Image (cartoon, rainbow, N blue to C red; front, side):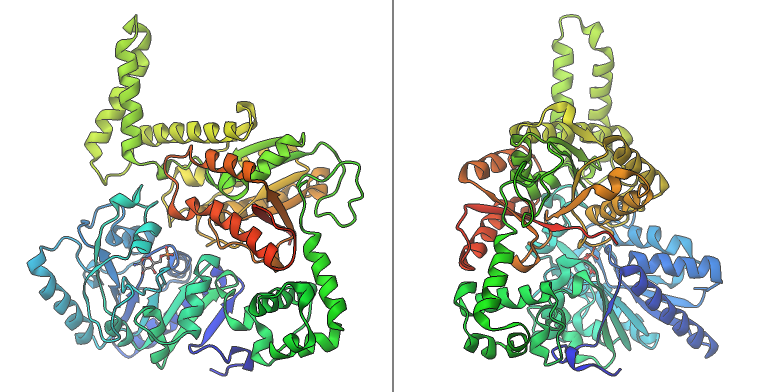
Length: 628
Ligand code: GLP
């Protein structure tokens, strides 16, 4: 594969696709060719399979090839990378069940050809099971193509940091970060298994071809480490650098930390100095030299590979001032626009005032995490703020919470003066308690339990929103069906989701919409809801409000925006931060990433300060969402 100079920093060939669907299509075509070639030679094609949300679009494309183009898997043998230790094959979160639901049940692969490490071994069986797994792979001539995802620790399969280059199939202890990432699948970190059986790095590298896929910004930093960093046991995916036919297939979001994307001037190729790229270079340069923007001099430009920029847009003093002003103009304490003020250099227009602001939260907590302080400001400044939780979030709620509420309801009902009045409530509580017991720790929630958990989260969101001054009739719940009918990592949206979003937009005719998820993994809840809102807006484009509405993207648990990416920076006072933290504390089950939000807001303020701008306590950041 020929590589351009821009890719000089990359030690594994890396293809950036416009989106995961395009990558999935390309990879599925390759698989089709492998199957056809091997079968012509009278041999089975041996595929190494992965789990997680990443390969789902690829599996959907394989199913399509099977159903619509007649691709047969009769002569395909598969080996999965890993399995949670302690989960039986029918457990809802076992990889065996995941594979059945996501692909195997929809193609014609014979059951006998499917190999997945067992999750239900006794400790004394582990060694021989793993050895047999290795031998079986070798006896079939090795894996023709191994599909990989990547965890935030840089693991492939479950090869956590510390796994050696030559490690083989074995039992492994899961890293804390990995268990945090799986927390929502298992309704809480405490329920995530501690161990797994995984192919080793050495096993994986024996495959003839390897393709590692990664989507969304949350993977960007680990992808850059694996592709450009040193080969190290600390990032097991970096060992792909040691393979003659390994490639990374990534989307735009996951490419953001690669040198060719992030610091293109370092690659020695010509850079087109757009305003965004110029700002990026200036902010980077200021951080590198630990100087505020206005104190950068010619030498700094030259030493940081930016002489080109200087000759195009200098002299430095003027360029510095221009960028300083641009950054300065992102700061506003008036996210809804400042009425009766000149708005030429303000992020948001002054009129109309007040505005109808629609704050869309993919899951109940997201908007408070990402923009709690800004919600507070919008309300204080007299705008008509409506907070809509797009999904119910019920999958996040631990059983213990459901148990607590059902028990309380049961007690209340039995203490009622006239028990007859509480008949329905008593029955509901009893049903909930017995269903909780029947399903056990890991069983799937019944519709009634999902309903109860939805109500619990509704209560938490109301409570949190009250802390920011939002009244009940301004807190709405859309309960989009894709979430109600799905599970994490395998949601599928339909026309019904789109229809209900369209209805919401038409009903509220907002002047401003706030949303998140543009850079998220497209299969995550925020990734799915972002695309749905985008489609719903398109469907409303004939309506006046849709064209006039300003669209703002906030950051929830995704990577924080860097200063050059920010279009609106809303400063928060220490008191407002306290209010936001207080609101966040009303949620029972925030993930560790979500809990970090206030610290990220404070970091944003530190960054602005070090660039020479005013020093605030904290800042919430937004990007203008440009309609495609
Ligand atoms: C788990 C799996 C990996 C997978 C990773 C990323 O840890 N064992 O094989 O790559 O999750 O998951 P996702 O694709 O959902 O981001």
